[in-house]
Amino acid sequence: MMQGFLWQAFVTLFVIIDPFAVLPMFIALTRNDSIAQQRRIALKACVIATGLLLVFAFIGDKLLDAMGISEAAFRIAGGFLLLLAAIEMVVAKSSGIRSTTGDETAEAEHRDDISVFPLAIPLIAGPGGLTSIVVLMRQAEQMSSLAQIGVIII
Image 1 (cartoon, helix red, strand yellow):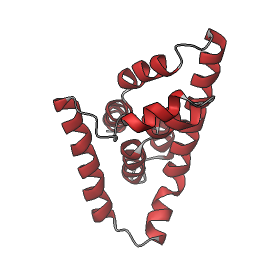
Image 2 (spheres, rainbow, N blue to C red; image 1 turned 45 degrees about the vertical axis):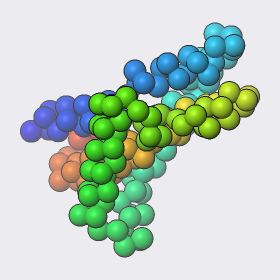
Image 3 (cartoon, rainbow, N blue to C red; image 1 turned 180 degrees about the vertical axis):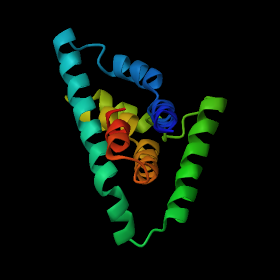
């Protein structure tokens, strides 16, 4: 049962974060940077996105409770975000959920450091990823703490 859950969590986060869509954006935005700068930007973006996902994994549920958002309402909103991401994948149209918009890309091209925006947020740790991690952590509460750690590491 735990292996099935971990597999589900991995697939969910892999599809939502979609590293194959992040990579071309990273290459386009860092094409004029040296290899050392590209590595620094990629590492910083991954650390920031992981930190944000960890924060949402541990306090996202409490934050939603403090705002009075029920689990059912959150699941509906999360499902809607996943639906929009899926539609974006099928029609190959950018809505800004899984990728940056044209204005965001233009702004990022003129920034010195793109690791926080747009790489870490919203490309790696976007609304779909944050929603998914909270839902997955709620499911993992019914399992062992090892499963919770597995979800975060994935």
